[in-house]
Image 1 (cartoon, rainbow, N blue to C red):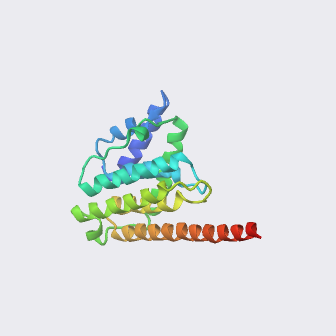
Image 2 (image 1 turned 45 degrees about the vertical axis):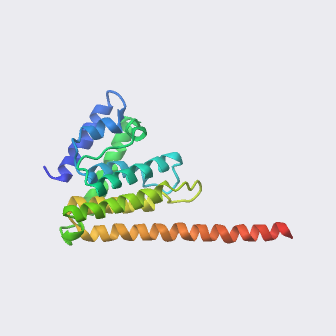
Length: 208
């Protein structure tokens, strides 16, 4: 069974289990039996693909991705989530939406991904590179922007392309993931610079 088949089977199983009672992330991910980081990250990142800030959920998610990235960097084969994230219970409808989003994205991206630039995705080096992507993207996502649109979407895109790179052994997707990290940093920097100049203008106005 390849990663796509495993993803489809897992999401269908989660939705069925959630019909009986809300299924926690910990229960769902434990049933994956140490599957690839990419599969777990893909399931976790879908809720963050919306332009509005998600408040504490964004911070918690960002820290979880950074923690997963650190585990990859250290060479752990079975990822572990923080307890607060593991205990998050999702309804049948939530799992259905996550499953629909995952499959729609993966089906579209599968059209242009293919194995290439293996040095960026395979072996210990590929694992370390993936860990760096998750740690950086998670850290950026965890920055507490209460009013900034797309503060969770842009680093989420970096995580998505890491997932595609890992699932398809596609080093080009790794480069694109780093590209989204750069875009996120530039976007946040522009926001801080704009906020700084706006603050100066307001201060000068109040002085008058």
